[in-house]
Length: 380
Image (cartoon, rainbow, N blue to C red; front, side, top):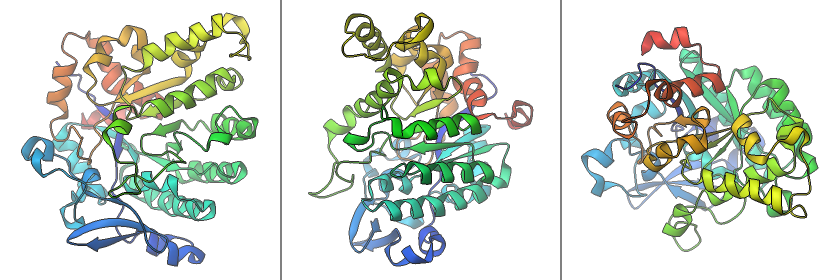
């Protein structure tokens, strides 16, 4: 039997087409992201003519069950589920799906971590954070928004993190993988980790947010291929190792990092490899932890993984740690479990003890993002 309280650690909004053109700082208005219809389909465009992506794969909730053959990168805004951009309808859709509360990430916004102009990217993020905070205020006990933060300028990132906390947002996402020469083991990020810990803001690495590389979309100049999707956990795993091996979580023991929409089963091998490297390759793992701690100990204390349907990962939960696993629906994207989340959870959690199920489908998410369980369970 599926636990009564289900919380999604990874759901999404779908930004309305005029969000950036109406809200972005005036200096960037002529370069703001916009939706442009070409040959009957809507595409996301930024700057003068840089096509980021079509919208089909980020707006097709339910199609995988009813008409999977219709799923493609092509789509039109009028076909986007209204709950993506209307918070009242979003809450109704949660009730249809049997989900009591959600942690909310962007849809279009994921792609804007690849905008080359750092000032423009920061302006895009500020406008989005303002809109998301308003969206979540419709029911702040059930909707926890995740701010977008640009760390090209660390002090600017700290200011936006502090502003996001004042807006009432529940956490912050940073690029899953920064520019190669500015990976997360660099000391320049220390003030940001300190600020996140002091503010109690969990940080996230979400799929599709690499700072470098080609922009995902359709056409010759994109990173849209099966190989990159099948191996997508590689980049957040590198970032996680950089953070652990450089001692970030030793210095900031209350800092929480969520690795989102990369599933689970990759983690046990990486944990084993981290501990082996630390133990056997001293020259490669220069930083030595206090108190006999191992890299995997910091994973189990400071890191959580958000997944959707990883049956193999569920089997490996003793190695991953039940306290480190959070389910998410990915609404309203094409891979979403909506509107059959409870049915799917019942299947993939078959045989898992009730207390472990309760943590995986809601308890861990409530702990990390400080959901008021008493208020949320009224909607369970």
